[in-house]
Length: 135
Image (cartoon, rainbow, N blue to C red; front, side, top):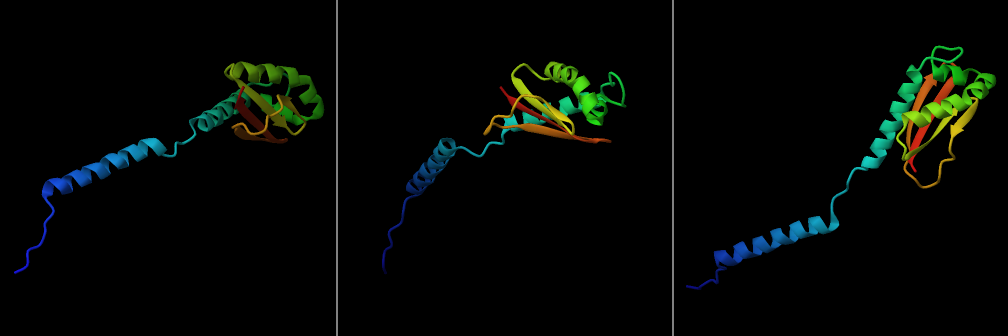
């Protein structure tokens, strides 16, 4: 009869414990992919700003402020400064923005390589796009 060597149960438990500890350490060291909370927040800012502008009453003509600024070159030029001030009041102080209409743009040039939130609103005269990023 041949005798077989048998690994003791405490050695097996120790090996499993070491593997578990290494797995946990590796998880902390390399981390897990994290959804970009900043991007979601910027999209929310853009959507909220677009919703506010879409609900605002026009200052002169049109059904909403966005309809008014998208109506013509003349109405955009007349309302450009008011639109700029309104967007600046709606957004937090640490955000910059750009509002593109069919007849012009209000806000700041978008820097390359930064996360940007955006929202698009359809009007009778074309789409208005609101973009927001952190300053």
